[in-house]
Image (cartoon, rainbow, N blue to C red; front, top):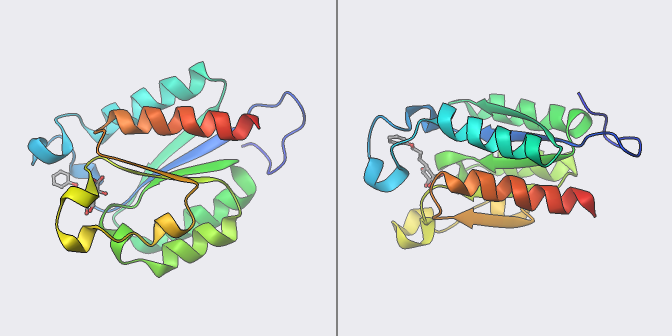
Length: 155
Ligand code: CA2
């Protein structure tokens, strides 16, 4: 895995994290979340990362603690983090704290436009630390997030 400060010319690496229930994509509520599976979306994002010369790894967990541990590890092992925290977006100070401690660029992504939905989805703890937020572009948002991260890591 890539070190925190890669030598010149060394590929940058990104970690793509997905929170609770996103493993269910493609099975229910396609009108909100689309018909593709998480595996499809991560494959497309991974292909775009490769095209842009980035190393990438995607993980999903239904457990907050797994996400916190992976974010802690990312401090040493990855150069940037793309995260769809799922419902933990709206509740998790622990994920916000872990992302803050990681000291890496963070992009927050949501399949749906959370601002057009129920009031309780309008607030995001993660947005406090995110460099940018993508919401409402469906699965293509992950590809857009990879492209945005590539630009951030080039600077
Ligand atoms: O729009 C998003 O990406 C969300 O992060 C998805 C979360 C939701 O709690 C956030 O408010 C917005 C929910 C993910 C649930 O995924 C499902 C997948 C298939 C069927 C049902 C739910």
